[in-house]
Image (cartoon, rainbow, N blue to C red; front, top):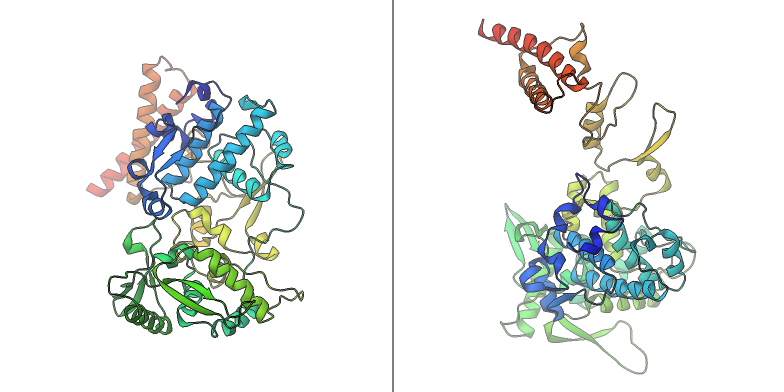
Length: 480
């Protein structure tokens, strides 16, 4: 780790006990300005090969402390497979421009990384740049490196979380039927499997698998193991996939290994015709996301597909994923099931793919009042069963104990040991023995550090005596 970062205001936060950043700071890649993808970033190798990219470069970041923070954020997201190569390269480009702006305006010290400076920069930045820098800085916020979370105030409502309404979806389904069979199948896979566009271009020709009497399809993500990339395939789509396999084998040589071939529009006259005519080429699909979104825009216009406000519906391929996540949530699917269906590795991604109504959002928030009368708001995990068990363990007579597990000392912990009404049975023996051992260790440490008269040592002696009496009686009961 560089000296510049050690001397910065961030170092104390980064090295706090329990901060996951501490382990990443010791990674050898933090000392390099060029990361070779093949040798040092194997999870990005497939994507790098398709884009013809060999390295990630950090040398343009002229402020050493900001360079180290950028490396840290990228390293964390690569390790959790939260960012793909496209996102990383876009973020690095924005980080370079932001770093140049900081230098131009004299903000060269780490203390410049405050909200007022960011708001000043945002006045001249593009929306996409603001989004990318927000992604970078909020990783640092989660690592407790920044004391604030970056949230830009948008003048108009952000459409990111919107889903495809049922009315619009029905109109789209009707319009899709006018398309060529390969393009029709692509959109149906988008709907049924919540595929990413890039995943469609990677589906191999030999993609069907039969597992325990059910048909499954291999959808390579470039992130997961092969066993996790298979998705259940409805019977009607299984038939369509088999027809597409036959189409590819008949049209191209047996050496062509992809389920979908690249295509281009065949123009007839000065303006695009409807329905469109496509010409297919013997090569892997290129620029698939751009092609599908452009086609969606024309489908909506040609078929006059409108929202309730009378405006043309604005639909992108990514909204099929958000619709999938939202519908699955409202059907009562567990968080892990939604995660598997969307092929996510990061549990935190689910919230971005489930659109909550204001009423549902209220249910996801729980308000507590502590001993001082302070109002505390907690976000509730979507997995209600896990949450219920967690709160059951924390239940006390008058409320819930929300003591973070990282705080090891609590003067009220195991307070039942001093209560005459508490009773124990043989099933409690393992826990009682474990508690006695922990207190014995605490007492030993206190004696070795000349703190035999401390409150901790006195408490440990009391706990040991009480626990020993209980344990001896229970052991005799078992032997008798």
